[in-house]
Length: 334
Ligand code: CUA
Image (tube, rainbow, N blue to C red):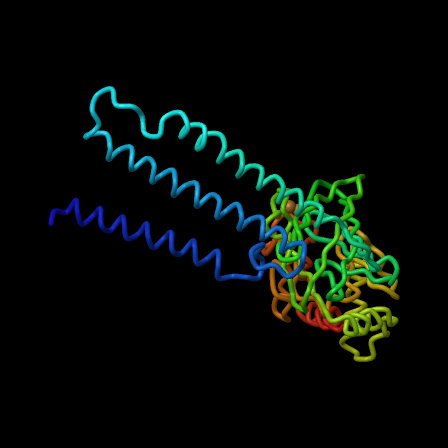
């Protein structure tokens, strides 16, 4: 075997492996896939996707087969022999069959569009896009969060979407399609989850340096648990008793954190950064950038720029004891 054959085989093998890895990579992580629907709306979208996929496969296979027949027939064909199938074949394969496929696609898409109309709903959540995080408000319940939306299962939730700066796009692939957040132009949208779970969402419109770090989570709870969650979040924020937490709260105001952040029932009323009233129970820091652990939270307070360059949060330069107490205070905010 020549070295050229060996190289060709290696290239072919690498190609097959790469294609396999891409395919499996796409299928394996179901955390954020339109093809793993968890609501009637996303089932409609997934259904459309699969229909287009199988029509595409069918057209590809038939076209390739016809091409192959044409190639193989050519050497034996007498000069001047009539083309295969003649005019009826051209009309059928060039007009009738493509037009029927396009009509099927058109009507199925229209049916899905009707099914994606917002159904009647009780709960309204406001989502405001910022570079690069999500402000989340429950106007009727008086709850403010960031980068996480809790919803009850089995019922549609109305979303009011807008932006503070540039255009962002709200997308939770397992729960519905996309909708833009446009400054000065509120859009309404809806999501629903058929079963409890944590559904990852993502900004789907390029919005600057940290667009890729603009994720969020929708946490769907059974209705009774959701009501408990609402009740807990409406409780007044207790004054810390532990001396470390009291000191942490003091550090929070002395270091100027309250200029940008709000903590309900305290003097902190800043609005440039996320509301921290329930920071301790949040899943991630920096809109999905890091898991919300003790080490990550201290690292984030000390130097958020190294994890998410370009955001508004400055380095803090706090002495270690202040940093520990501040972190402990923020973690206590559930
Ligand atoms: Cu916000 Cu991309």
